[in-house]
Amino acid sequence: MFTVILNKKRLICIAAFISVLVLCVILVCLKPAAQKSGTTDREKLLESLGYIIDYNATQEEKQIVIPVDFSDVYENYNLLQRKCGYDLAPYKGRTATVYTITLQGEDLYAHIITVDGKIIGGDIANNSAEGSMKGLVKNET
Image (cartoon, rainbow, N blue to C red):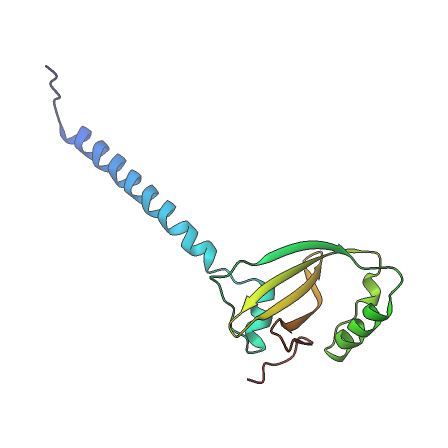
């Protein structure tokens, strides 16, 4: 048999311990929600352009090296970038990260290119049968 004598001091200590324990559980449960609400610069950019991100879809991330010598394809892509206020030329030979973000709309994706966390370009692509690509410009739909 086990007997515990409770006095006022022990009751206060037990209540304080339980309160701290409950507070810790609440903070642990709320932490993922707080992290989810943090919006990246990529998301802010797309939202400012009028696009709605499909947060239920998987977002991809890959590393590329921007070529030192641009092919015709890269020259044309960089022309698109320059029309939107970006330029890949200063980043020739650098490693970049390309984020593919699914947008709401039929087969609509954003590709955001960053170097050292800075957005340096990207595009909005429609992967439907007709297919199209445009720079990071306002959504007109």
